[in-house]
Image 1 (cartoon, rainbow, N blue to C red):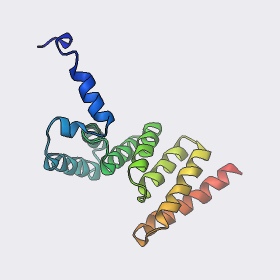
Image 2: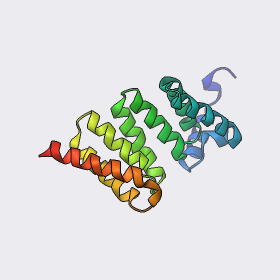
Image 3: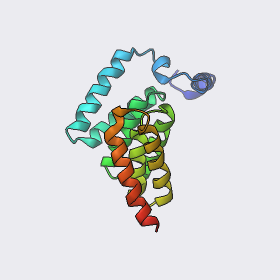
Image 4: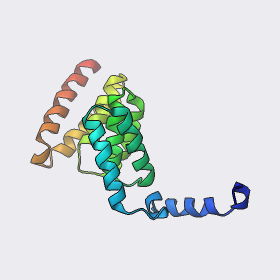
Amino acid sequence: MDNKADQPTSAPLWLAYLAKGGTMKEIRKMDQSQLDAMYKVAFARFNSGQFSDALKVFRHLCLLDHTCYSYFLGLGLSQYELSQFAQSAATLAHAEKLDAKDPRASLMMAKSFVEIERWELAQKASSEAVLRASHSARWKDELQQAKKLIRYIDNKLQ
C-alpha cells in the first residue's frame, strides 16, 4: 500500500474529520503530554533566541492542533523575530480568533503591520489590543504598549 492510488478514501475521511473540528493530534492518537513536551522545547528555544528552531517546533504544533492559541502565538512571535512580518500578521490573526480575551496576538499583529507600513491595519489591530487589555489588570503592560503604539500610528497617519 505504498501507492497513494491504493488509498482513495483515506484523505477525504481525515479532511472531513478536520472540517468538523477534529485535530491531527486526535487522528494520530497523540497524548496531550507529548504536545506539552514539544511546547516546552519550542518555548525554551524561543526564549534562548533560537527563533528558527522555535518556529519549526511551533509550526509542527500548529499542524497537530490548529485550535490551540498558545501554539499560534508562539509561531507568530517566532515569525516576527525572524522579520517575517506579513506571515506573522497572518498567523497572529488566526491566534486572535482562538482567544477573544488575550491581547498579545492583537498587539504583536499591530507591531507586524507597523513593520510593513500597513498603518490602517496596524491601527485596527492595536485598537483591538487596547479593547482586550482593558478588561483585566493582568494585561496592564500590554495595554500601555498598545496605547503607545496607537499614538505612534496616529502620527504616521497624519
